[in-house]
Image 1 (cartoon, helix red, strand yellow):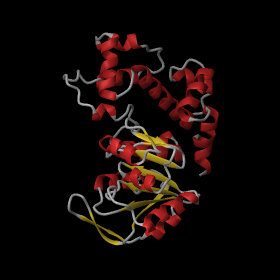
Image 2 (cartoon, rainbow, N blue to C red; image 1 turned 90 degrees about the vertical axis):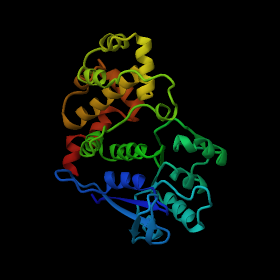
Image 3 (tube, rainbow, N blue to C red; image 1 turned 180 degrees about the horizontal axis):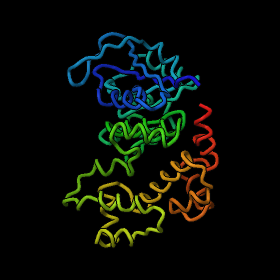
Image 4 (cartoon, rainbow, N blue to C red; image 1 turned 120 degrees about the horizontal axis):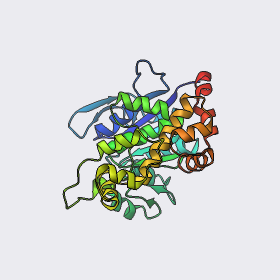
Length: 320
């Protein structure tokens, strides 16, 4: 199987972090890990491309690189306040029409909307620009709270670190949770963050409570147990209501949704790395039965545990 070709489309002044996020996930050859992607950078005008911090990139590829890409990443778009050139718009539209996957980080969504590719569809961008985005493109269903939205052919994310979330999500979709988790470990970051932008965009007037880190670690080690909100509250010595508020403040989600996400993530790893029966996987991750695991797994992942194992399990890995 050939490498999945990822091409980043940049424009001066380029935001380095957003470009670096894509390069870190898709562009590094990590020791002890199979290399699944190739990574290139292109610009409408190859050569020196200035950056927001005052440095510069030297880009050798032009828009022709987009015609060869399997995935195109737009790692922010500095020209969101002006019309993109017809050449750029046409190249992006042509790539999408032939089946390339498009992924926009932060203001990169403005370029995809200008190309008409988000009309009537859900998208997100950095919370700071969400209202402007919605006003400029009223045909786009803008979700200002999502860290990222994946529609299959097009994905968009919030700003900066959410670009890493999106890129790791695309790796999970392509090669499974285990491969994405190994990349995340190399990057010394969690493979998946829960919640939305609200936890970062809204200033909390009162002082946030003590970090939930110790509680989350305790709960993650006991996913096989039937943990409830009351169990978590008792462990943290808080009332259930106060704990739920802390989850909202610090993680942007509820305790129940967080627990379910951890259980599904653990199930994905077991489906990839073991031959345990589905019933045993369900018990190991605290979902009690194969029926419950199948229902929850389909809701969160969009497929069945058996189909996921066929795609990303041991046998699939040996055939690559």
